[in-house]
Amino acid sequence: MCGAASSSIDPRAYAREIAGARTEVMVLGSPHLSSMSDAFRAERLDPLLARLQAFAPAIITIEALSGEECDLLRRHPAIYPGVAETYCADTAAARKATGLDVPEAIAEVEKTLDAWPATPTPAQRRRLAALQLAANDAVSAYVQWLQLPAAERRAGDGIDDALLARMGELATSKNENLLIGAALAARLGLQRVYRVDDHTADAVYGRDGDRVSATMQRVWEQAAGHPLLAKMKQLEAGDDMLALYRFVNAPEAQRMSVEVDFGAALREPSPGHDGRRYVAWWETRNLRMVANIRAACARAPGKRVLSIVGASHKPYFDAYLAPMHDIDTVDVAPWLR
Image (cartoon, rainbow, N blue to C red; front, side, top):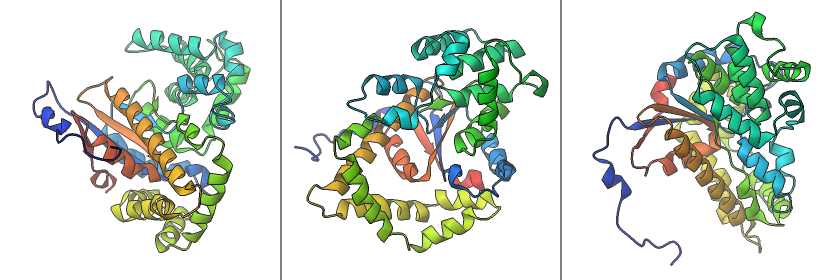
């Protein structure tokens, strides 16, 4: 019966004895930096980056769609109308520069990383960056770009003038995937980030997406006066980004996020159960995102993993990661002090 417990077995009971160290996953909830004012400067993130660098993750995941998923979304426009156009970059310029479509570029990236040297040359980094752009992995391409000396951030080795311009766009983008994820990966000498977002869950709405969105807009308007939302806006307007990240990752703010959004959606009384459709989409999306994190963890068992994601995802990520056999979720608060 749906919703009823069918077994009392706890998978965690089988995690008492494992070969090697447990994997530690820390979820950092983030405001979407694209919504910050024009006065925002990336340097304000330096105190946060210093603390995350001390955590020293071997793997960093970000809220972005993989090239594989974007390829799938483009192949099924009837099931996912407009989704690829909204969330996936146009890779035509990178395909022209490299001669590779997305699946071919993905395969070439994996082949290149399998043979990656301990001390790559600038030409090798430029070539990998071009391949990653063609694989619809611009953030990882920027990780390579940041590790090049300034004089080597130029055209060549697959980077043509169009891709050079694309790198310039990434350098000025106000996005936590780049300003935190890519910046931290470059500081740590990593070669890529892992994209774990999911929008195949959008199929949950079927043909009712516009109606559900309109219903949820009314739900959100009712919560607009919540005092904690006002506090968050105040912090977003200030210079202390570390204080903002402490706030959005605190249990009080996390509870507020769930209550005014998903809790309110469950109580929404429309005849079509629009609120419950929204929650079904949200839970499906988060389950698939956490599955992608779990898969990324398998690349470095026993190491530390940092997952950077929109703050409203954090309580779901922590809850869904908790039952995994060999994973411990790490409290982010001590690392933000």
